[in-house]
Every structure is written in structure tokens, then in C-alpha cells.
Image 1: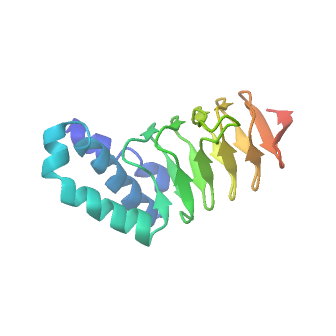
Image 2 (image 1 turned 90 degrees about the vertical axis):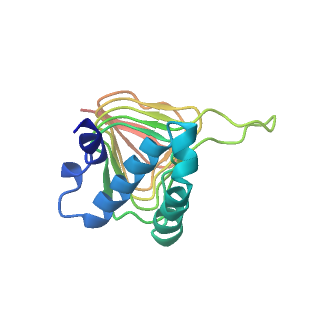
Length: 167
């Protein structure tokens, strides 16, 4: 019973959005199979099916090693790219054409990936890159480029993103 609750934990957050429900169900299933070496071997064909359907056909890159809290909502899931080392909290919203990941540093290495808190609403065409922390209850406006930390209970907009107001 707990396994099924795990698989459907994003279902109610995506009511009337079957595509998002399907993508997140497949994502949770691939995460469940990714826990042990034996399940990785047994379910390798499912890993390939997941990549083919979700990444190649639907254009949504949610890697199997990604950490996402329950209740994720996907709105218009196209051109969505999230780095595998990103951490996303509970009850967050991701919209189309969003990129979240590390950045290349001057010395040629890569930074850490963003850490996104709970109840964060990320607008369309947002870019969040580098070692940044997004606090809880944050709204990031469409088209924002986030390269610095965003405190909890605030609104960030623009390129580069600036704090517009505290909620």
C-alpha cells in the first residue's frame, strides 16, 4: 500500500493534467527501481522506456537520481530540464522551458546544483543555475534568471533576478 501511495503522491497536485500525472508516475516508478542494483538490472528496459517517452518524446528531463518532494506540479511540461543533483522540495510548481542546474566555474569545474524549498512556484522560461538556495514559499516570475539565493517568503523577477517584495 505504501508503494502505491509513493507512486501516486503527485497525482492530486496535477488534477486534469494527465500528461503531468503520467510523467510523474513514470518518474516515481523509475526512482523506485533505481534503489538497488538488482532492480536496476531487472528493470533496465523500463529505464530506457522512461527516457524514450519522457525525455525524447515529451521533452521533459527529470533524471532518475533527482530528489523531488511530494506534490510536484508540472504545467505545460515542454523543454523542462532539471539536473540530477538538484533538490526540489514539496508542493512545488515547474512550468515550461525551465532550466535548473549547475554552472561552469572559471576554473573549469562545476558548481553545486540549486536547492529549492517547499511551496515554490517557478514561472515559465526560468533559469536557475549554480549553487543557489531558494527558500520556502517563493514565487519566481516568468523569464527570471536566478543566480543568487532567494530568501523565503519572497518574489523574484528579472534578469538577473532581484527580490521584488517579501510576502
